[in-house]
Image 1 (cartoon, chains in turn orange, green):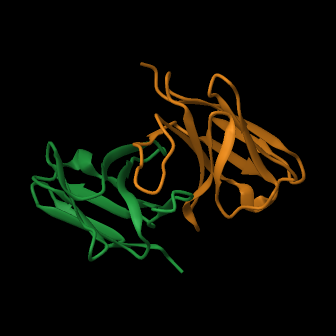
Image 2 (cartoon, chains in turn blue, brown):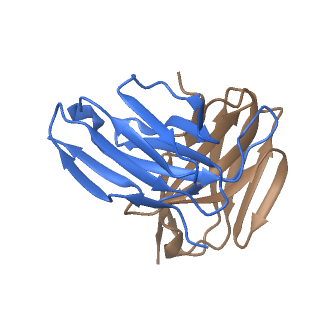
Length: 117
Length: 109
């Protein structure tokens, strides 16, 4: 099975612009989560999608948004980019949606490295 | 406030040594995950556990739910084990994912 793919792998944007990142999960996986990794804050959870609906959201401003399509592919969008948005953005897919008593193994993509100048 | 604390932050070991990385957390969880990240960014899930102990090759992960503590052990460490190891917890509210700051491991031949 092909792994999780993310496009593009590298991106340079200017402050104030917007950006869209794409994630294709492993075939058959219905949950896609997005994470931001920076040297200062480490890994942080952005949001999780399952069956085209956002199920969980981390503590990020509304400039960060996402969506999931019927084939489980997901996109995340960051509007009005700030210098602090420079980071590695990772997506991960899993077979199911975590709940109070269950969790699922996360399969990570290679990430998109975003640089905001 | 850090929901997940890892120690040590950095670790250097000689090839063949037994290594332990610790993770403590403050929330009720549905599961704890151990992740490995090599230079270049790629993250691999090593273990997902909610109780007891799991073993995969030279890696062993344990968790004590009552004490809210987990350990990752590497037996007979090898230079290819050099990576950042990250502990992550899924709260039993199911609506977040909290990460430790990672342990950077270097194994010297």
